[in-house]
Amino acid sequence: MTGYILAIDQGTTSSRAILFDDKMEVVGSGQKEFTQYYPASGWVEHDPEEIWASVVETVKAALKTAGRNAAEVAAIGITNQRETVVIWDKETGKPIHNAIVWQDRRTAPLCQKLKKLGLEKKFTKKTGLLLDPYFSGTKIAWMLDKVKGARKRAEKGELLAGTIDSFLIWRLTGGKVHATDATNASRTLVYNIEQNAWDDELLAIFGIPARMLPQVKDCADDFGITDKSLFGAQIRILGVAGDQHAAAIGQACFEPGMMKSTYGTGCFALLNTGSDLVRSKNRLLTTIAYRLNGRTTYALEGSIFIAGAAVQWLRDGIKVIGRAEHSGKLAEEADPTQNVYLVPAFVGLGAPHWDAEARGAIFGLTRNSGPAEFARAALESVAFQTRDLLDAMRKDWKGASAKTVLRVDGGMVASDWTMQRLADILDAPVDRPTILETTALGAAWLAGSKAGVWPKAAEFARSWALERRFKPDMDASTRAAKLAGWRHAVRRTLSTQAGMPPDSH
Image 1 (cartoon, rainbow, N blue to C red):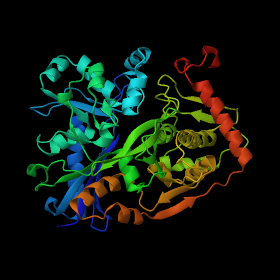
Image 2 (cartoon, one colour; image 1 turned 90 degrees about the horizontal axis):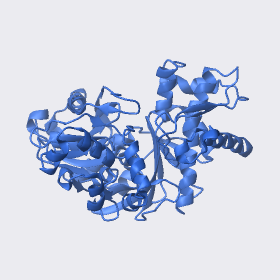
Image 3 (tube, rainbow, N blue to C red; image 1 turned 180 degrees about the vertical axis):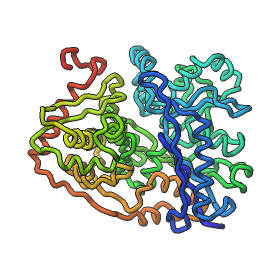
Image 4 (cartoon, rainbow, N blue to C red; image 1 turned 90 degrees about the vertical axis):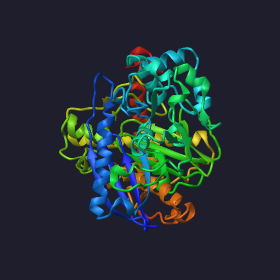
C-alpha cells in the first residue's frame, strides 16, 4: 500500500488540502479562499456549494503539485471549522440555506430565553457547553424555524443536518454516508459527552428530529469511500476531527496535562484531562479531545473569538499596517510608557466571560497614541486572553500545574515578538514546533494511523520537534501591573447582560 495521506482542512476563510508522504512530510498542497457573507449585524454565513467547490479544487491542486494521482493515496483525513452547520436535502444533497458560521450571533435571543427558563445547567451537565450562539444546536433550530417548510420536511425525514465535516463526507461519498466524529458532535449542544450519544431531551427542547443527525464515530474510523468520479479513483476516508482537536492531535498532546493553543482567526486552548471529565466552575468548556478505539479522552477548552482577527482589523479596518506580518515589528516600536488596552469584543467575549452583548473597546489612549500602540494593544490582547484561560484551567483541574508548557500553532505564532510577549504574560514557556501545519497533520495522522501506514500515537508523539522555546523575560511587577490594567479594561467592557451596572461603562 502507498503511504500518501491527504488532509482536507476546511477552515473559516479558506479550504486547504495537503498531501503528506510516508515520512509525514508535505509533498503537495492547494488553498482557496471563499466568500464571507454578513447579511445582518452579528450574522456570518458561508455558501456550502462554494465550500464544496473549493474542497474539490484544492484536493486536485494538492495532487497536481505533488505529481501524484488519487490511486496513490491511502486515505483522507478531514478537519473542519467546528460549529458551522448546514441543512441539506437528503435526495438532492442541495442545502436549504447558507451555512451558519460558528461566529454568528443571531441565536443570542434564543439562548437568553433558555437561560431565563433555567435550562443552562441542564445543557452544561450533559454537553459540557454553555448556552451561547457559538454552538450548533441553536443554529439548526433557527433554520428549521425560519426556512419555509423546513420543520415539516425534517420531521418527514427529507432533510439532513450536520457540521461541515458531515456535509463533506456526504458529498465525497456520493450521498452514501451521513456521519461525523465525536469531537464535532460534542460541539452541537445536543450531544451527551458522558454517554457518547445524541440526547433526546435536548433535541426535544430545540425541536430537532434525531433522524436528521449523523452517525457518530471515533476520530479514526471508516467514514466511507470517495466517489470515483471526483478524483479519478476511490479513496478511503479514515479520519475526522474538528479543527482544534486535530491541532491538539497534531501537537501530540496525548498525555493528561498537555496543552495546546491555536492562534488563527480566534484562539482556542485545549488542555488534555485524560479520562477525567472535568466540570468547569470557571465557565470553561468541557469537551471531547478525541475518541480512539472507543475510548474517550476529555479536555478543558477556552475559546477566544478574536485573535488573528484583531490583526486583520489593524490591516483592513483601521489600515495601520499593510500586511499582517508587520504587526509584531510595529508593536516593538510602541512607547513603553503608554498603557493602551484593546478588548477585542467585536463579536462578544468568549471564555471565561461568555458575554454575547459585549463589544470592542480601547482604553488608555493619549494624544501621543498611534499605530504602534494600537498594534501592541492588539497583540497583547491575545496574550492577556490566553492568560485568563490558563488561570481558569488551573482553578478547575489540579493537573494544570504551574509547570504547564504551552504548545502553539496557527498563523500568529510566526511572530517572535508576539510569542515572547505571550510567554511573558503567561509566566510560562511557549513551545513553537517545527511543523506549524498541526491541524492538517492531526487529521492526516488519524487517517494514516488507521490505514496502517503512519505510526501509532506513542511513536508519532516522539516525532514532534521543537523549533523554538520562548521563556518568560518580564519582571513580576511589570506583569502584575499589565494584568491589572487588562482586567480593569475587561470589567468596563462587559455588558449589562453580564451583570455589570449600566454606569460601569
